[in-house]
Image 1 (tube, helix red, strand yellow):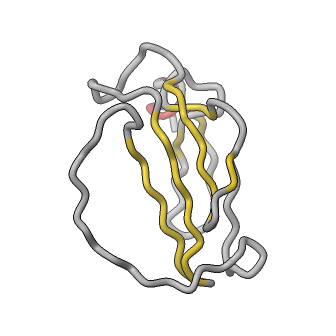
Image 2 (tube, rainbow, N blue to C red):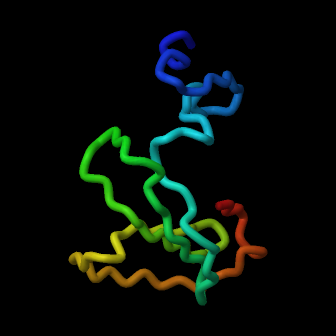
Length: 111
């Protein structure tokens, strides 16, 4: 706990299996934040994420980043993060899915 809090992180013991006890607080200067409104797509949502500050834990951070969320089945969610300013190769893997609505899924997505 002392090491966690010394880094500026939040400490919160929990009984939830595999949940971290040490994590960045919501107002951390690291990471990304929503860059605008959530855009609804045919199969889910698309949002733009912007880097919070110049601080970096890993280097070569990309900003902005697009997050696409696709409801594929009641038990399967696909999310995709990509740089909207650079084209990249993607494996041409076709995954057939019936597509479900957020209300039909057995999980919840929050931004």
